[in-house]
Length: 531
Image (cartoon, rainbow, N blue to C red; front, side):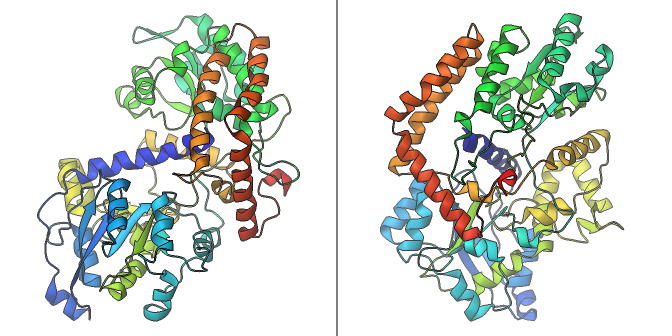
């Protein structure tokens, strides 16, 4: 459950990519030969497969500024091919691998490509062609194959050794409440620092009978994943072994708290049946007072009412008084890009990878070319040009086609983007930046825990799927239970049932992966309170 929730952020990225690329389907163009000859680059056209069938970008160096920038600088034109992982498996079976392959970093096809000799070790290409290309050591170590080589470059990887003192880790662990409603009924953000204070605040909202646009106010949409973090459940035992957070005392405490909220009418039954889109409809209608889960966005509400603002509250401490250590967005990245062994353009591609891997190129890829789309302000933050602002105000879709922003992010590094994020230009942006800053203070580097993700296609993956399904059913029963005693009874019966589903095999898999990851990172303990 933990891993599933943490990867939901990728769905948001996919949504953004899809919307931006839907208009980028114009006819591809050939490289600017004169410009490339001037730069000393031989024009080449490479085939790049992306294992994501929603990705429909077509290269257009004549009309898309980012594409033109890349082609002019490197001589490379890209023919993108997209498809699902099954299509990639067919390519692997036939041995017909394109020049570049981009695949989810935990997909089973990744290791097959590496171990079958279908992709070339990047460390060898770098040594041969681009010796000044410095790939962060943590990236090399994290993606190093058993043969000693690393074969791909990730996007969205947080390399700790490249981070600066002011850099923080993004997290989706949060709890927020409507500022306007709090002011109406006399609630303060710090009231949510304890379970009792939270109960009293939500009871105030319920008892006030307050309505918004004719809708009765739902006191809370809270979830177990966030609460178990608030209460300080540890993913690592005191002896350094991996610990299942959902089997901890704090997990039971979170279920009991959700159950109490439900029994008091402070948490609706549909909190466990509605999907995110349906919950966001209620948020947009203005009928939700407090919520957890940062991915339940509220922009639509703010657009209709600038006074309807969600602000950070809490976080709620559990009975043990443990501090919150929030899991960040995945630190090991998302997709991994590799170079085919049979490619005739290995030198050109590794030089392209080097070009795309600079901090400033991440900004160019995300916003559009520097000086055309953006510049730095006096504080080193990104500042959009007047022309870009005008273009997006006049026709956002056309502007996206023109600048090509965020359509070529397969090697993007989020750290420099986050570090130079533009200053807030309106109240909503200001509130969101304050929100992120508030909860990011609790985030910690949990890279070692990401190794516990089960590889698809394994026996353990099947076991995990069965256990997740079972836990989802039991979670609903616990939240809707008639008493706290019933919650505890269900919780205490779960381990025996999970053992029958193969839990011990799954645990051994995760613990071994965790110990191996800590060893590679030079860590004895990975959870801050244990260090």
